[in-house]
Structure formats: C-alpha cells, structure tokens
Length: 406
Image 1 (cartoon, rainbow, N blue to C red):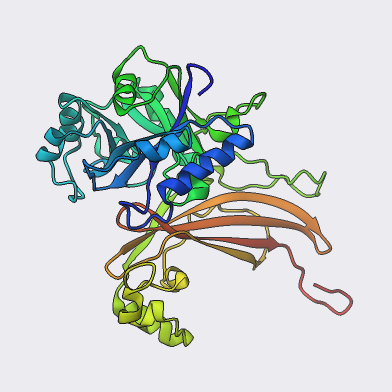
Image 2: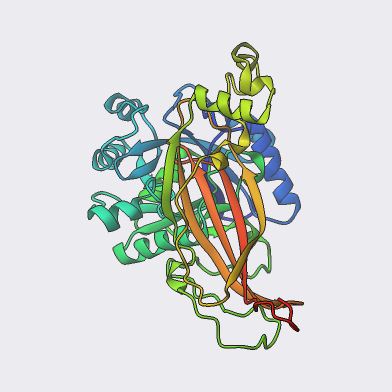
C-alpha cells in the first residue's frame, strides 16, 4: 500500500472452503499482482466461504509473500438473504448453526455486533438472496442492519441499482465485493477505505465506525486518471429505440420500457440422478463425469454432475413481454450460452428471466426490431449455474401477389 487508502474485495470464495469455487487463495493473490501490474489499485481481499468458518485457518504468511492482505469472514444464509460476517469469534459460532439456510437475520446482525464483529447484507439487490426483495415484498424493517453490499460482481446493474436505492432510502452504508468463485472474477467490485486496513480488527473497526469513510467501486476505476463509472440505477431502463444508424423510417418504435432489466422468476426444477441419466441418454452423452458414479467420485467435483446444457432442457415460463408494436413476422436471431458452476444431484435450480434490450436496425428487407432476453439459472444457494441469452427479430412482411414479393 502506497498511501493511507486501502482497496479490498470483501466477498470472495475459494476452493479451501466453498465446494462451488475453483479459485485458490494463492491463485487469487497472483491475480492481485497481475492487476497491480496493469496499474490498478488492489490491496487484498476477504475470503468469505459459504456456511463454514475454520478458526485455525491462517493466510497471513502466504499473503506476506505477495505483499497483500488476506482476511477471513463467512457468508451465512438468513431469512432475508445472504449475509457476510466479519470478525467471526468462537462466541458467534457458538450461537448459530452455520449450515442452516434460514438463520434469523436480526439475531445474526445483533450477535455479530455483540461479539465484536459486524454483519453486512450480501448482494443486496439480488432476487431472493438479497435484502431488497424482502423489504419490498414482506416489509422487513432491516433492524440492526447498517451496511449493505450494494455493488456485487455477480449481480447485474439493475440489481445493484436496487441495492443502492435501498441504501440511500434507509440511510445505510454501502460496500462492494466481487463474489468471486474463480480467479478471473476477483476484484471486479471492491471497497475503498480511507484508512489502512491490515487486519480483521482494522476492517471491523472501519465498518462499525459511523465516521469512517469507505465506498464501493469498480476495479477499473482505481487506475490513475480513470473516469469513474456512474452508479447503477434501479429505475426501469429507458433505452433509445434507435440503434444510432440514422433515420430508419416509419413511426417511432413503441414498446413497454418498464420491463427492461426487470428480472422475474420463470420456474424451477430439481436436479436428480434420473434427470441427468435421461438427459445423457437422449443425447448419447457418455462422459463418465455425468454417467459413472465411481469415476466421477475421483474427478474434480467429487461426484456426478449434470451436463452443462441440462437447464436449457427444462421448460420455463416466458420473460416479461415488452409489447413491441411492430412487425407481423418474427424469427430467432441467435443464442449464447454461459456456464459458471456445475449442477449436482439434489440442487434446486431456479430460472430468472429479463428483457435486456429492445432496439432497431435496417437491413436489406427493411426495418427490423431486435429483442434481447436473458435467463439465468441459480441454485438453492443463490449461485448462478448458467445463463442463456436469446435474440429475436421482428419485421414487416407483405403478402405475395402476382407482381410482388415478400
């Protein structure tokens, strides 16, 4: 650290304690060094494993080799979503079964404080596992909550915007973290403290101090001379109806802009061994990681996992309808798949769909309107397993006649 400011990623998962993570602590430290070499300010991170905290684990010697800070916390699951706890003590651990997925949030925040630590609402704007939804739909008061992770690397801009809106409305403090499970995601979002943070005690003291200055930010914005990205918005996205290609002719494009960026749950399914077997049989898939229990037990996941495309084989409901008032003919224009984590037998997968964008272009056949949709699939821990983005196109066609064409 070259001045009194400290840049820390407060939300990281490693292969040491999170079975859905592929990044090692040393791999993360090497990534810190690489980001520094590209001119970014990055001092370290906090390992926050899911539902598990080992009091005897210590990364200080490893961190010293990279001149970095590696602290430890835990991510627990409560009745208002996931919560990060820093300054975990034996007294805190004695009060809770960390493996529970519905701990009472008010007790978690209160006991964390009373035992010398601090609790932070994780990925506040995320559906189901963030606190915003519980405030909006259940009227939760957020008693004892003072800090929320408003900038989360695993959340989209709309979700992060909702968290920022909550922070402002309730007079809370905001922090940032990447929610990294793999090395390349580390530091995408982090927190800048206007003081030196070297130990867990330093971190807890800063988060508990109402006079302390800290703010969430993007890693790219830490470079000298970087123009800060604007704070995400939780308001409906009013995208321009033109792709910037000039006048496309015809009336202004009409559609429901209030649905843009808003995510809705469209279904769920359980991953079972029977579902995996039938999926593999249908595709003649013979990879032993999906079909052979004994082989898979010795593999990288410690057991059978589902093939990556299994989520797309289950019928889900539709994304919100933007009600585009154009065209009498539609077709699929492309799909893109992303796979993040393996789905395992026993996982409950939920689908969340949104309309990302509506825009228009002109082609040889005239004016065309494109609609981009995204469906992400999350497991019962709120971790994204996969996502699919689809683009459809609508256009006007004329009926054939003796001298005309479509």
